[in-house]
Length: 379
Ligand code: NI
Image (cartoon, rainbow, N blue to C red; front, side):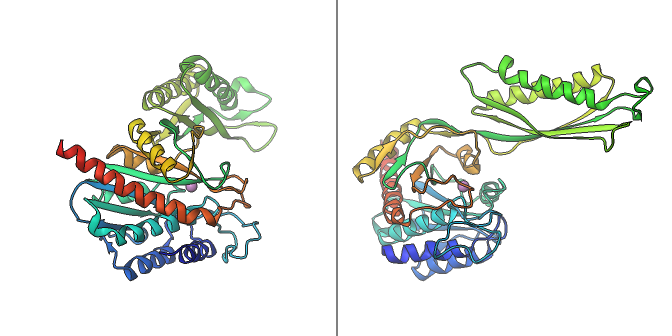
């Protein structure tokens, strides 16, 4: 696929953003572009998202993953190909990811007879709501994948730079909530009730000690209470109070420990204040760990292809790409796309000039890694 066509695809996707789970036109567009070039599509049974397959249909198997959903953001880029849908925008560069992996898929298709195995190219829906990876994994079509790769737009690196960092790069992101039940009363007669607000305040304060006193200083974690709600006037002590927040960590051990600690702290503090506590903990994406050995090979190839390689800093934001890494190891790269506005900002942009080199890089990476796995299997 020539560069002009690739940029056209990117601009079309940018003009037609669709929210998580609603990526019907995006899916149709990608399906058409792949089918037109004779790329096989696997039957996922899903309404949105695609898995393309290129190569022998036999092992070794490598997957390249793009996410395809947009965000409920009002675009302010002023680009000639800005979103045609008010209030919906590709503000995280998933249009770039989709176009880039489309380009990689078509390059691999041209080299299909030379591939010593199979490449599955995943166009995943619903990343922004942390559902898409689980949907793709549940198809069972990725069970045989031995290595997963993805790239993510990164506005803090200029075009031509790739971020490759071994080890933990992105956090787990879990949601917790506590609902406290006391006993409502006249605010002038506190002795007649059980005030859930005082218990809630104690829990909020005590929760801050989890990171400072419980987590090993060499580990990273976040415990943030982000919403509190109680009462509706000044002279009535309410019956209930609730809070909600998030836990982030870079390892499963720390994550498990914080969950246990938070639950005990909420329940025991509530009891000390005479309240009942309803504690909920919902797990989101797992921490994302880049395989160190694979990172070395990725960085070497990136340099060979003329990219500057940088070790991007880790972040406490989460990505459901970590779900695939429970099947097999892999690497998520940062693709420098310039712009200087953060992902999810209404002015976020991704430099289209990076598309062609990034597509070539991922195609070469897939082919190179297939050869590597083949040679390992032969040993
Ligand atoms: Ni994103």
